Amino acid sequence: MLEQADYDGPALLDCGNAPGRALEAIRLGLKGIVLAAEPLILGRLAAIAAESGVLLLEAAPPALDLARMNALRRLPAWLAGDGTGHPV
Image (tube, rainbow, N blue to C red; front, side, top):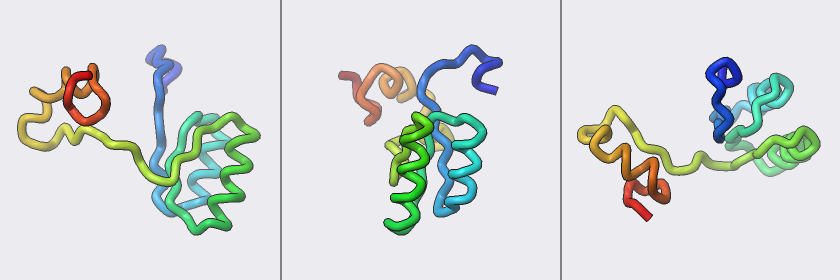
């Protein structure tokens, strides 16, 4: 879907605590995943992710919740800033 939209920016799939979903995401060619798992599982998935050139994060980065009041007003600053909603 991202390729069809000609999107080449960062994209992450949050797999929660499901290592099977993370492995599936790697096999499907996603380039970024978030996985909250115990250290042994995280280590194994990190090795697979590294071999595949996939970014693996243990926690999701800050995000702008567009469902919150005034979120659309903060969107330009979010996109231009450092992820806090404040311009840099």
